[in-house]
Image 1 (tube, one colour):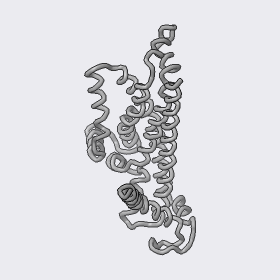
Image 2: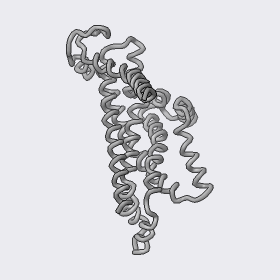
Image 3: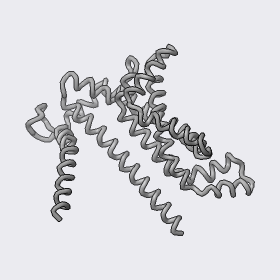
Image 4: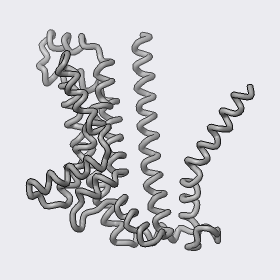
Length: 265
């Protein structure tokens, strides 16, 4: 009994340590004063000032544009790659899985510098294009990892039965495989979108003049001195990521319940 209470207290301290700074940051984004130590009243002026800032608006546009485009492209590439990897057998499948794991376990700074050197080697001008390609590169492995479990859960006989009944491989893909792995595809898309919004290191090494994202803007603002507008911007980003994570978890939970019901049936 004592161990149980101690473990709960320990977990409570850990959660306070992790989430107290986030709560304080969000709370003081509504503080009327610039002071980060005194609460002088509720105000939305830092949010108003935030959206009146041209640099912030530009960074927000590039962040959302790159996140959406890279999420869509990496989801398409990841879906095709996952289906291909799943159909492989033996040693080749193992090699492809390990190759896919490399970008996931590789430190972001190594990936960022590698991509930067690659663009320099091919004389590619840094800007929107380089940042977009970089986001697609590091998002695609996560999409593959989201879809592969759904492919493993799928009954292979369904595809074979569809083709025995006259369906072409393309028709079987559209009408049998895609609907079955749809939860994994949506989860992969949401994860890619979240990772793209959240990324700093890879974006920092592959950005060009006039093209930046919100995480780089926050870093630049923080170096000149933390302003309350950073609190407001961080709160908005936190809310967006939190909503996306809730959607991902709900989607994963719903898909698992659906799978369990089908197994029981």
